[in-house]
Length: 432
Image (cartoon, rainbow, N blue to C red; front, side, top):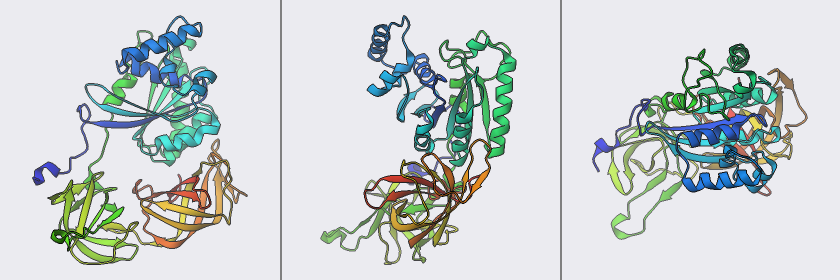
């Protein structure tokens, strides 16, 4: 296979048809988020005729004259019956300029944990607010989660502008308040857009009612916001998922390590460190789909061959460049996801990339008050949807990056060791 086919591409320029944007939506109950997503899909011609017909029929059965576009996203029966979104739904659509993966997350406070799931891989978060209500507690919570997960771009979509007579001062006041809060969280990029999802204003087409607004529509912004990054800007991190040792005569001396390159670029000849053992060697070769190449970049799935016959197992991390120092003491910011509280003394499993180890909760230094961002010291426990800091002690060393430096190798999950339930999502380092 030609090496030229595997040269790492720089950050994808906006406007290219091959660019992919992963984004998440979040908003309080009844802010119109499902309608916004439905309008976005409908007006960008990203739904099939039979889907629209089904929504039209369902709307008529409910006594509505016009199709209820929210039904395009509220796919579960319980969601349709209650008129709310209760689970993360992933939608895939494309325009001539970009492809999209949309994670539509619930608005109820008890489902805030679902936003953590939806936004964990997102490059942009759309936070929806009702123009009549402005910034509310759930708005601040969603902004805090986006900041915690280091989502690089945030859109404040001020919805239902038609219900406030498309008044510019209303939009300006909401945008100013949200921008100030986002700045205190360290959110790097916020774009505020006034919309009416029900009427279609500034979603896909520019609004005829808000000539005072000169910015992009929501879709235009989604199509042009910078996405991706140059893998060469990140340190190479390769978690080993599987050790390949063919037993056939022609491959008797072959030993490869298969997995997905979590970040960075890896080249044949690169010096690497195997963690947590700390053994050093060089990359002898890289195989992609059974063919040899000299280079790989995230997020390719590859097989790496090393120059020296050293002990490497599933769960080890092959790192190029500055390698993280293995540690058994973990300080992390977490979002607690389960109804079962997290307490000091709890024994859990910690899953980091392909490695799972036993751990104990040593301390809960603080919980973050989402309204004020104040730190509530030494809470008795972390309850569902709480964000706080934990100190963990692991049974075996882990090679952890700080989450602010590397989202892939700076994150982990805490799992109940009895039944395998996911309890907590963790990000190594301080929150804000």
